[in-house]
Image 1 (cartoon, one colour):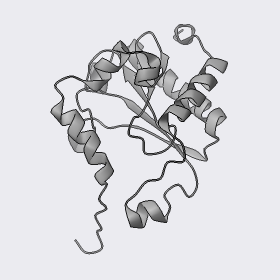
Image 2 (cartoon, rainbow, N blue to C red; image 1 turned 90 degrees about the vertical axis):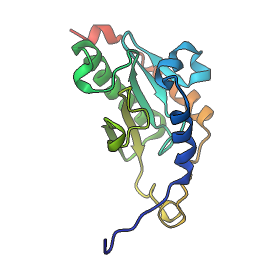
Image 3 (cartoon, rainbow, N blue to C red; image 1 turned 60 degrees about the vertical axis):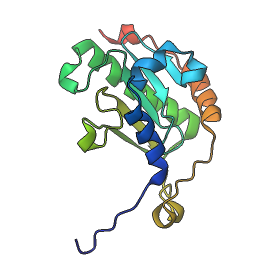
Length: 172
């Protein structure tokens, strides 16, 4: 195709390789470990908020149902409602923690749509800043993250606790 450029992201291969070689679902396994070990920010009744271990940007969060389902149509109304409330709460906490200029929020359903874990649906909440797709990412195929995962985790966990909500109360 004329004018179409392919940019390689070799740093993502390690993530895809780990997922493909594992017989266990990473999103089913994470809640079985401590919050600090699994980078879980919040545990709700039906879903949880976790930092993406292979983020597109600092503070990249995932909202994941505990139940192993691969499509929106498989979620109960209660699961979907809680997940949407946690997306909204994640945006508020990320604003307070990192003051981003905007957000990308989405779901990739199926491997063809870019789902790294196609059998377990999850929302992405990615904070964005003007200029975060700079020349290093565009020309050098390298993404720079200004903060270590653990540092971002502790900041977000602290901000979440400062702004705690009762998810069950919001169901009504």
